Length: 233
Length: 104
Image (cartoon, rainbow over all chains, first blue to last red):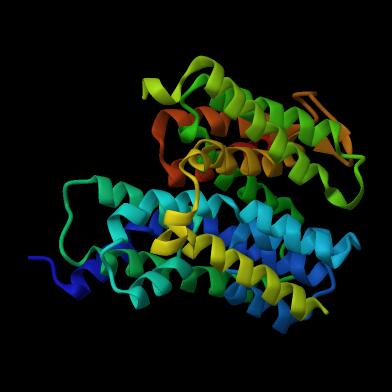
């Protein structure tokens, strides 16, 4: 029989595999943040205020490159637009929760809790305490992220570069993206993005990031329209 | 200054997360937007991955013996598609890179 606390713990337990990616990711963020000139306090609090790995990495990279603040904020927001999709995708499962629950759960919506939560909601192990499951996974991920950031900040000068921890960031995203690529338009969108991300490197203010993303989205959308993929779902 | 941008970024991030959890916003957003939005995660994350894997000190490097990240990342993509496991993908990618670094 599922109880509130059993669901909370189940959520926390199911998110554990993601810590393998999140921990080095947080470490790298802490190290990068210090290297980019943030104070330890700024670095650590950013992990609570923004609470988004990709966004925080993009933030410090742009910040340290001297990109104008407005562009930093905008680029981070565009990297974050993917949350709208996550939020849309999960909304059918949480729409009957009270506002306070929706406000709280939204804070914990990340690549990892989304992927894990969707698996859970689509499974046959639902209970009336699914929001506790999501909260448990969110709290566990949040704690891991904070601890990793603190370790990264503290270890900024002593973590050997041979560990290639920055590569763990790419690997986390590969683990999330690769299984999501199913249709021809997905492949086209990713290849377009990849080419643009390289070709547009000379753009000022690291605008290649936004431009490559938008280019890929447009191509994917266009091919989806041409091949009527949405209708064939 | 950095605090302002941080709070600005944090606020916008939270809004994107809450967006569709809000009943009025979900109703206000046109339905067709979901098609382009579907491509946001795969493209934005790809945009972060590709330069990280293909560029070495700012220039393209497709040499399999010099660009070990490219080899390890390709391996990880296959592992990710086959296993669909985050844990195995990250672990095998890192171990692959460490072995390559030790070999070359």
